[in-house]
Length: 441
Ligand code: ASP
Image 1 (cartoon, rainbow, N blue to C red):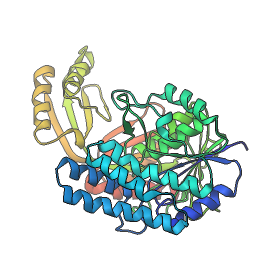
Image 2: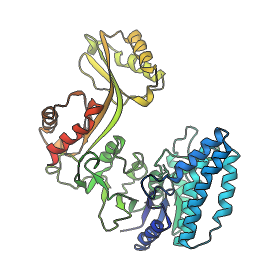
Image 3: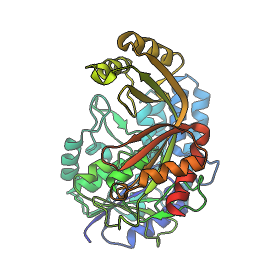
Image 4: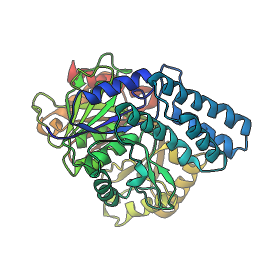
């Protein structure tokens, strides 16, 4: 196997002792040549992630609360200085931290503040491994909207990183269109790892975290669920979008087109084989009908009924123009001959917005009936095997009806990769358990 890119998450970088574990892992395989790191995360439950502290500093500056700023920044200083002591190397962090403190206080911005956790983590890791530090601002580029400029980033990444046989790179940030530091959304270090893997044409992208891969469903919902040895990029996208949060849902894009597999591994159980994320499944589809089940709470559905809707050209367009005008995107659009529903994430529906939408939709589309279901959860059952096995949806819906769960929306993706049901928020866990029992017990 050729060269590998390893990305280590916040719990792996949380303290001097976890950083030593990381170093052991990297040094155990000479193909692990490029290392991407997150900011130090939680050391114990109740601990605060460095990134959260940095956001709190930036909030304090915005609120003009200097006392709060210094108090929170001190916690960051103590964490990094403790790590410096633990690893037994003087990296001059004290002076560098003071410079960052001053920059944030002078208004360097929210993204700059948030990025410094990864910056210092990478400096530390580079010193521990005795490998060059390469800043992500040298090649990760965002456009005016904060969207990753993929092609430019991959090309620059290839150029910059080819000058190094080994490197440590901070995750989570790059350079915005205004020339200032810009970040991905939370957990975006996974995307950075993927970008580096793509830029150096890695044979494997190892994502080291604190779990041994993906489970069929959330272990907080089903006791000791089965582990998934292999997922496809598509299955991963569906599951992580729906709340399986082992990996950032956008992190597959850089590696997917190059066909680079991802391996999820556990820093604290490095001997576990983890979960492989690949282009084409090698699993026996007759055995694995369903790959995973994930659920997400907090959606609202708007259902419209109108006689002869099917013959009314432009009906759906009129409805969508209303939500588009309000800058709202929808998650699903299940439809029947004379009915259609729009499922919208509640984050798009602050106080009063739903009423406004209903009013405007009534005006433009004149439905016979319009009604809503608030507080619904979406539960996705995902797996390439579903298309190959007759009767999968019958089994799923029988399991839900046997468990007394009322389904108020059904959407089956056209690739037959998933079946999504909408249920009351209170039924979300029961729904996942019922589907798990049917397909895995
Ligand atoms: N440190 C960032 C966060 O906490 C990014 C990451 O860890 O991937 O969201």
